[in-house]
Length: 225
Image 1 (cartoon, rainbow, N blue to C red):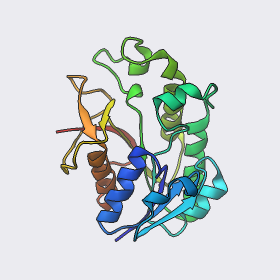
Image 2: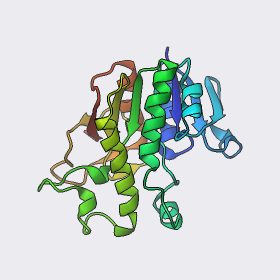
Image 3: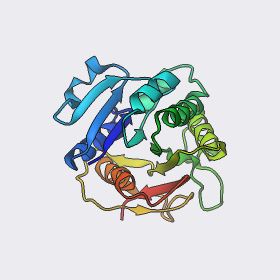
Image 4: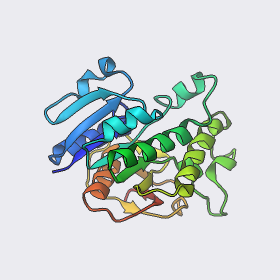
């Protein structure tokens, strides 16, 4: 049994990962912005704490004593909320990466799994999805660029943290059942461009990579079999 700190545990991906980890017998610290609005995720084996993924003191203190950290964070709860933000901090994901890597190093925790964004995968022509206005809404481009900057920072930093970014497809299904299977890809979308994945099976992939790490200091796509 491992102990796992999950930043962004109140979101759809975070909730699925929290549930999967708990169901496998792991001890979970669910890190959220406001514990009062996410009391429903409290259960045996889950401790809910307030934390800020962009703050070094927060990441280091929360990570301490855990075997792994998961980051499923977003500055907003979905596309509609992102559009309503008005101004998005373009350094949000860079700041999160810096705080996580430095905080985990201080805490002596070395496995980090992050949830990526399909928009910075490549299409069949080698172009980023976010650069194709026919495939990606222009109003979400600032969010995609912020996410991409975080990935770039991960790839550039010299760190002892063994990180992995798992990038799901555009279509994540919250209602689909857990099937316990998935497949990995590279930096490109699948040939059909329309692969889907359930949040539950994304969570399976995350916890599998914590229990038995197969990918190290890289980004891979993950989608349905």
